[in-house]
Amino acid sequence: MESWLDLSVPVVTGMPVYPGDPRVEVSRALRVAEHGVNVLRLHMGSQSGTHVDAPYHVDEAWPTLDDLPLERFAGPAVVADVRGLPARAPISPDLLAPALARLRLRPGAILLLATGWSAYWGTDHYLAHPWLTPEAAQAVVDAGVRTVGADALSVDPTGGDGLPAHRVLCGTGGVIAENLTRLDRVADAHAAGHSIEVFLFPLRLAAADGAPVRATARVTPPSQAS
Image: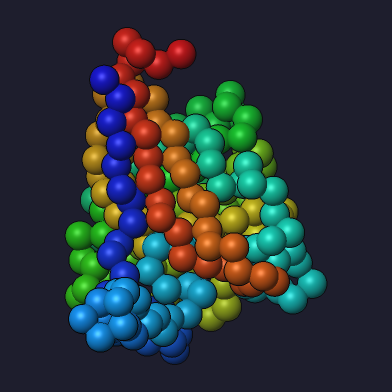
């Protein structure tokens, strides 16, 4: 029987954000006892929590979130299992080679980078995640991939100079999903031959650089996969 996985982190006050981004604050705006309804007040940035980056995030001449086709945000997934890398380790093209070989046979597939770093969510060590080299990002683009997701704060080194992997991936009109979670379970299911579909639909923010998403995966056992 197929199953579903929630790949999103919960949105709560004080949750981790990229250094310099707006803090997240969630509070009560209205209460049933006083106003007849419950309503939350949200203060957050477009890159808060589990989110997608549009190309506009790194270049004002590139497409905004609402310029992108909906198919960028859903599709079959191929997992690059790079768990076990040390802190701040580069993810090179050779580490992605098995996944890229599968991606070339699956047009429209989404690449998921399973680093295992979501285990450090909420700690300072979360900032020391592995990162995608520009050469690896180019190999991803050359394989025809236009959507990449990672269980880390960024596909580039946090605190590094510039965002070279972002620019390579987004320069083709691609999108990047960051701060995913439970990719360890997705990677294990993928290795066991399960079929994985991923859904990364963002809030419809006008002319935006990105937006939070409720990221999910549908996992189908080999006997049921088409």
